Image (cartoon, rainbow, N blue to C red; front, top):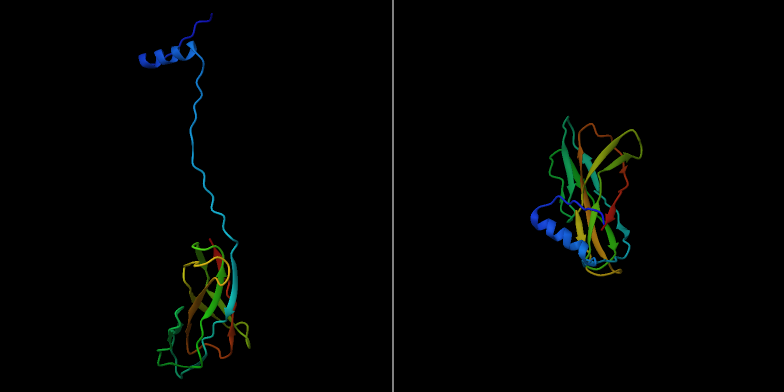
Amino acid sequence: MKNLLIRVGRVGAAMALGAFSGAAAAATLMASVSATPVKPLTIAKVQDLDLGSITLGPGAWSSATVTLSQTGTFSCASPNLVCSGAAIVAKYNVQGSNQQTVQISAPNVTLVNQTDPAQTLTLVTDAPPRVVLTNSGFPGVTFSIGGSVTLASTTAAGTYVGTFNVTVDY
């Protein structure tokens, strides 16, 4: 028989010696496991955003902002601007699994003048950060995106167009 030297405290030594005198005992530990399967998300455009027509006033000025909130509130309060036409928020529909929170990302949009592509404006988006799905699949949840543009007396006339990059994720 070989000598066994174990350097532990007194209580540990007795336990260590006892472990070699009998059969080894197995230890079992239980852990919980859970999984939440979710349906894949789908997103569809319902309508485009439109800020209407904006007429620039005379003189030299800057920083006149036109705003359309995601709730549809329109503001064209600058004395240097005259706004007309219907302002319409963009709308998107997202579908997935009931009661799941969906994160929404809608970065700012570069609007390009269709007459002179060198002229651009930045649409600062106003989107909800998240929505909670109230059902699975159809009809999903529809959310709105608004935005604002800042104009100056030097802004070139023309129709400015851009494209949203809207991303949804669980």
